[in-house]
Image (cartoon, rainbow, N blue to C red; front, side):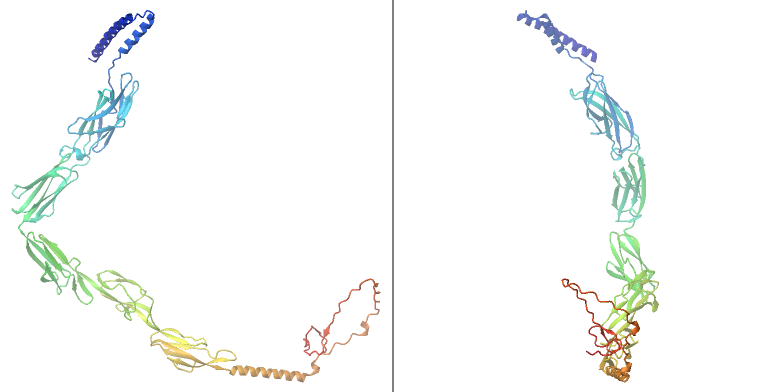
Length: 593
């Protein structure tokens, strides 16, 4: 059929061309173109005919997907390379589109990397088709089959000029079954409900499946039903008849699953059981119901109470119960509320008291005191090694005692295996102040209360004029430089001094005696004690000849002056003296002019 259509089109074009030639010839004759060359007329006729003749081709585009069948998982992405070719000379420019031809409605099933593409001839063009496969939440609700599912698509090529579809191809995506089986559950909030209580069923699944729930009475008749999408809950007031009810759940999501559960319905009153444990039988705790005292309960006592369905009640016991000294019992959860049949145990646990103090009391802050569970470890923090008290008084840490027994170290861990009394022992210290301006006083400082302190000064002090200790004044009196005192409080002692010149007098007297004795000795020694002058040299040592003095210089010459050396000698021993010396350093004789 396409060939015949082309042929008819070509015949009509030929007839039109012949008519056009005849009209052209008449016009040419009418204007009498005798001077126009016949070759020119022939050229015009050929051009005119060529313009009326247009070739007719089969306008088709071939689309070849890389694969016409693709396996994919739900929620995945499929990419397919499309190869486009055409047998028509000159090629085509086409617009690509994809249509989902399966059941249901899918408005935008895919996209192309090159949606509008020129297909050449010779040659080919490519574009990548991307199909986003929906997840099971789109495909599986209400579907009882697990898979596989087939999704058919048609790829079309539309000529951008004529808007005609000139090419098509098909591709099928086979969706694999979901990798997990459908699992569902139905669970009641309680195993038993009293008439008037709300029955609550929780419906769960591992996928958003469609479900249908049926709840049957003890006789098998229908008590309630519900449908929708999982997860979900079902609530309804329990009513007659009493007995066991059965919940049946069926769900579909790429498969079918079933589950069931049962619960019972009881009469319209509920019982509450209250028990008290952990305290001795001779101790009691008050039981309050809704804020009003109901009874005193001893250790290990049990009470069963009945209340109407639909009512809520609050139960409370004492948080602490006293025991023997240092013992008590503590209930951490001493308040409980219920609206249905239930039981509760008010459980007490023993606690031991830890007392922490100082001796003397209150001199510094200590930590760790309180009540603790049996076996608890409590940190007893270190206390200051010294604590300043009133003026002249301080306290020095001595030791910790636990129940009267000393414990080494400052700070430790106390294990509460029984009640304990922990005391930080301090020694009371009193200050001894020793006051003295001289004498290097010793003994001042802090002493333990009741101890004996010794103190002293050095006396006398100085040479010549001396300071001499007289007595102590203040908290001690005495005439001795050294003393002692009992430190039953802060003490102060002051040394009293006096000035003594006795030693000075003795030194001066001794010097005078020594000087007098020396002068007496000198006088008794006389001149014989003075060394005689040395004798003159013998005549034999005089030189035999004496050189004649040099002739005097001419009168015209200047005669240099010779330096004259004057030697001063001792008049007694002849020892050479320095200028200005009055006594001879050799013999001690005074020099006279």
